[in-house]
Image (cartoon, rainbow, N blue to C red; front, side, top):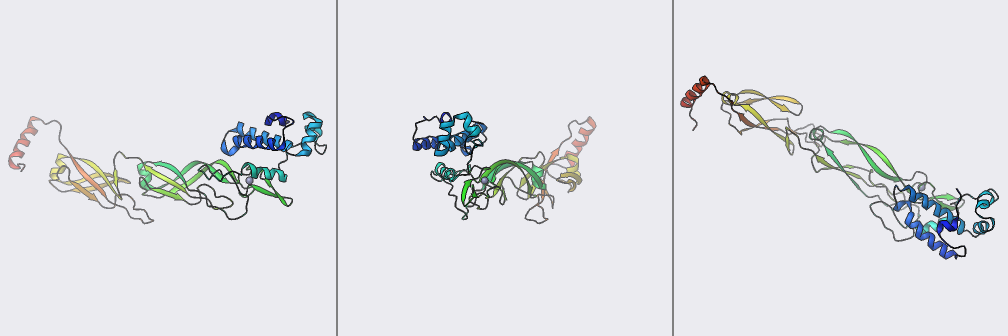
Length: 328
Ligand SMILES: [Zn+2]
């Protein structure tokens, strides 16, 4: 790639060094990748601006460019081997300090103006929240979930310093462009403990935003929402359900099958069970969590189902029943 640094920066050939610097500073801030995340066009523009400034801010390169012209400069200029962008110089380092030298703004997007390039003394990263909706039974049984997260990680190349040592000096890290951090999409597996409740947060240590200057990362907080179930409702560690029971089972009593989380269980009804009466099935509730193998209980509320159509013979029997067993 060869560019006209004057056109790229939009400055006049007679522009003073401080004006060139001022123009570059303004544009570089505008197109800086940190302020335009994911915008490839802005990133390309930022690189062009930086290359143009690399040429125009260096008196040797600038005079070579002015003397040779664009084509020859890129082919033969600078050591006779052709110009290539070189961001290793100490002037480049100064430049970075200069561009990023505004007030420290540690916002949620983790971008930090005014990276101080000091070694050590790291600052812990911020915690990060992520919403996770679980269906009712998954929340009760626990599971391993896969999360897709946009993550910002400490740059491996420079170890989060944003700079690399270079011949006794320092140069901006070419991988992270001095940010000390790189962005990517990461798949993360998380273990959801059995019995997690609606509104609860699960903390994944060290999976939050990265620290600065080698500081440890923050935590990821999974905010749990539990979807309702068709059969069960939950009250703490206990579950509730409404069971439809026939009139005769209620009158005569006996054993009826009740759905549970893990299958079915038998509920013994006494003769004369009333509509709306509630029974407890011990140990068929929700896991209480905390690493214990305990569970709450299942509360079953009876809803009496009456026979829909009665034959004359049946009506006769009901008539007799009402006489021998009046409802008080
Ligand atoms: Zn880096």
